[in-house]
Image 1 (tube, rainbow, N blue to C red):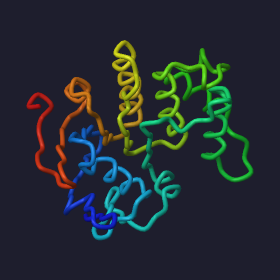
Image 2 (image 1 turned 60 degrees about the vertical axis):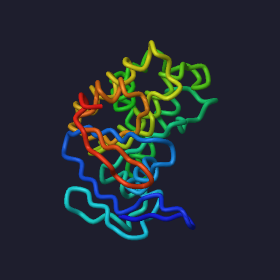
Image 3 (image 1 turned 45 degrees about the vertical axis):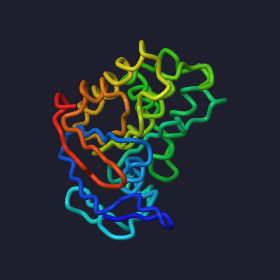
Length: 217
């Protein structure tokens, strides 16, 4: 696929396939097209040419919320949360968004999701009071109210302390395995890439310039 922003080619004839349950890391310098690729898959950016498919279905023209219901989940480098609300209140909002119209959010599901991400004990804390690791986990956990088939993660360990980053990734990948979801994640920390990726895709200047096994980088 191709995506241009004015005179800048952000994606230049990019083709990438992610298998069921596969964890693919996107690496490369800033401005190489990694986040643009994730945004195209999520539906936040439309490609100029090319197609996006999910399990053989062409979803190129579907908006982000419809892609989310089909199983494409997205987290951000900066968590998208309500900082003055509690962890539990943020989870209720996500559960309400995933519930059918006019139906109350499933409070048992809220507890299940928060427990699976190790957040139940801090459910009454305001988001602003959480560590960066807990904020990252909550941002990712909220997408699990609609079971993901592929999770798009943009620098999941950025701003997370060294002591927390492996704990965060362990919890995230335990939950991905639980629902048999794939992952496409942008990451600059090569230790994290080596520990969690099945395949590493290198990008430069909007192109894929190499694919490697984690031990080869």
